[in-house]
Length: 229
Ligand SMILES: [Fe+2]
Image (cartoon, rainbow, N blue to C red; front, side):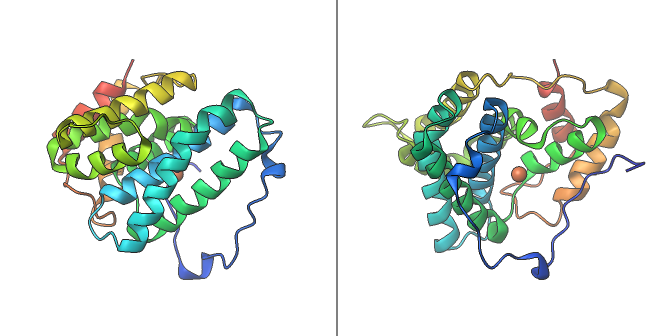
């Protein structure tokens, strides 16, 4: 598209009745696509879980997805023919979908869509890199929720506080990215594009996404600058 503006199209008519989760179809998927689409699924689950307006159902789906992704993504990446890990990842991505199509995504996706539109950055790669930065940006307002996910992901130790668990969860995401060969920062963001990136990302997120905290332009700029190499 001429404007390089990427945005989500939603309509109840687009809602599927069935999902075919056949792991054999994913066996030939290259490691890079396996890792980045898996991190996209994790981002769906985490963004949905920290949003306002979660239901019991969406929270449960998000927790299941987070556990399955932490248990299986690295295996699916390092051993692409592991059909059991592939199957778990498919089921996990479906749980994450059930969560985020009801509780929505947030700033990770808003910034990733904007960057993907401008520079063709693959969606999952952008999300994987941006996710820990947004979680750090929110700070302690989401620590209770992240602590719950940290327990689910199995990255906590007995006796830790919610703050410690939340930080352990963010560290575990960074560690997972590292194991999957995903870089810490996004290459190619141009200084001159920053105002447009901010405008588009904030327009996408607000008011559509029920994020835990509404980001202002300055805060969005700070996050984008942290992403830059
Ligand atoms: Fe996504």
